[in-house]
Image (cartoon, rainbow over all chains, first blue to last red; front, side):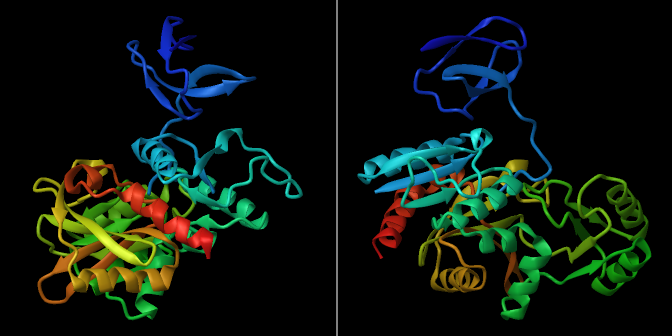
Amino acid sequence: MVMVKCPVCGEQVSVDDNALPGEIVEHECGAQLEVFNDHGKLSLRLAEQVGEDWGE
Amino acid sequence: MKIGISYDVIRWEEKDLLQAIRRYGSTPVPIYLKDFHLTTEERLEDSPDLIVQRSVSHKRAQLSTLVFEGMGLSVVNPSTTLLLCQNKLHTTIQLSVNKISTPRTGIAFDETSALKLASKIGYPVVLKPIEGSWGRMTAKALDEDTLRSLLEYQRYTNTYYNNAFYLQEFVKKPDRDIRVFVIGDEAPVGIYRVNERNWRTNTALGARAEPLKVDEELEDLALRVREVVGGHFLGVDIFEDKERGYLVNEVNAVPEYKNTVRVTGFDVSGKLVSKLTEVIKR
């Protein structure tokens, strides 16, 4: 596991080492976050909201 | 073999597919669309033998599939299938032309005409966005008064097709509809989607999945749908009508199947990978 800073509350969030970009992480502060690759480093950002074109 | 997974959000399905690809002895190549940037002359670094399109965003799915196809790569499902299934009017027309029964449906481009169309179809009518999923913004109008309000609401949304009114008869189905999965040239699994409290039977809106035995008639229908829309992996949504029998409501070109696997125990990802391996070997 790697510790990554929550972009909303600033707390540390544990993320699986093998997490892929696009994985969703629910943080206890209530934020829904997505993993992304920030210049080779796993990072978190606010997850994209459900879009009008989302679905099956 | 290398099988690409084109995606924007990793859901249960994408994780299961990645595992199934490894289990079947192939190498998965995840392609995260939000990191994707290539000129049309470039090629993917780790070029897969085939790509499974799993983007939850229809626009990203459609556009990235066009780019991959432009590189000479096979995509499941191809852009033609995505285009046809993601536009409900396009789906309905192609099914009707090919003599596959659908609910009675019409289109109008103005509120007054939409009210006339509803009178022809008969109330209650269902107003649906031409592009959309998970039952979002699908609304039932019991009478003209309600429909007038719904049309006005749609007109003032900022959706792309806000001035095209897709109206459908309200099919008095039992408290369920049917989802049959087409995987390659088979229709091996399906579910009932049951909801006693909401006429919209999307699992995204709380419908309960229950196992369904795909009989010969349903399998034949699902495979006829595949002949019309193409592709290797489809979720075909079917209504049961007392008088007319099965009516095909919609076809999903990037179907979700977590609940299907949960209630049937059927290995959808494994079956898909096995069928894709056959496609690659051809």
